[in-house]
Image 1 (cartoon, rainbow, N blue to C red):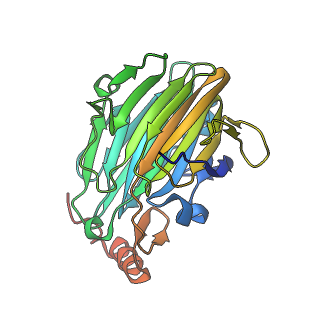
Image 2 (spheres, rainbow, N blue to C red; image 1 turned 30 degrees about the vertical axis):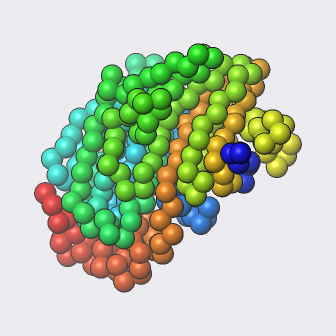
Length: 293
């Protein structure tokens, strides 16, 4: 009999300011590191006020991680030190492996009405791959398959595989799955996972209940369904069962294999030891940070 995952924790978005003055909602970061391994950070940037995002994220370094940017609405201009540049728009994904080091910028522009909405997830790289060559994947919305199940549930597969359909991003060390799932009102969505994997769901719109082994709802610590701008971190187990609220729910469902490695973190640089962080800082100062151009 499969063991259904229950709620381990619910994270609520916190308002922060990052980059050159971008107001965004941070779902989790370094304080939750032991719970969210191999994922490091999740931000939700959502505003129809250009002053909240237009200053963007000018040139800055990364090392040791992957950054995954998923845009729902609006344009984001980008460029990096290995020669990539362009714009990602509605439904597009930018999957960047920083590896040994990259310097890039991300400049949100919004859409014609000023709306900008997207998410950035940071995934850790294992020690064996932290100094790999940087890699950039520009995934257009048209390349992301979408399934509609018999009960009306819609699934966009950015990474992973559902019913034999694979997403466009593959060959990632932590074996992640990244799905955009829309569940109609009061329908139940079930999904199996390896029991040791970290699994989380961030609610974009609507509300959802997590169902336990006896098909009883497992609510958040306050006794309510999980709603917009909240993230469910699941306990270990073989599967999840999610029941949409009366207005349905749209959520991002993410999973991955924990690394169980030491973490040393300095802003956009994440390594395994303090010595490696000091090396990165020294290389930034003396101009030897970039190993690939």
